[in-house]
Image (cartoon, rainbow, N blue to C red; front, top):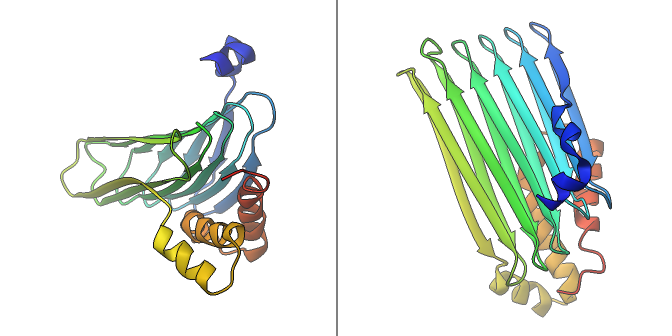
Length: 233
């Protein structure tokens, strides 16, 4: 609430409108967050047979919220991969609403959260399936990694399904770093910081596995891992 108050109520009124024409494919990759509060809101319409891929690293050093509303036409696809990462007691979050308005559309959302020093990573994800949107296939997958006590990761999946021939799945887990794996890597000569970085990289990499452009994937990963530099863990 403090971050929103500093932004002002007007920040919540601004939406970026995106339309993906029928049969086309759009892809967007973003690194978001700064030392000031940030709220970004997008409304995306994906027309028949089109595809929209969105990949985001959210590593702000102040409150950062990315909110996405998506409407899928027949046979359309939405792919979302997102990472929230950082410390300093900051809240970083993704909020999504995916509306399967017509039949045979698909969507997949993969979110990873890595936090420490009292920080919080949130994912609020809603999937809506209209009554006539048969053959929908929608999935959400959230995993949180807490690098020290006092940090938190929260997932609030919501499904509103009115069709009966659909596949909708969601999963959410939160845990700590695998100390056995870190010990094994250190026993093979890696220093603690490098071992931790490699384990975190493997954890967040799932969010960007659907991103085929290797250069863009490296930019997103590097931006996320840069948040670990200098962290006293």
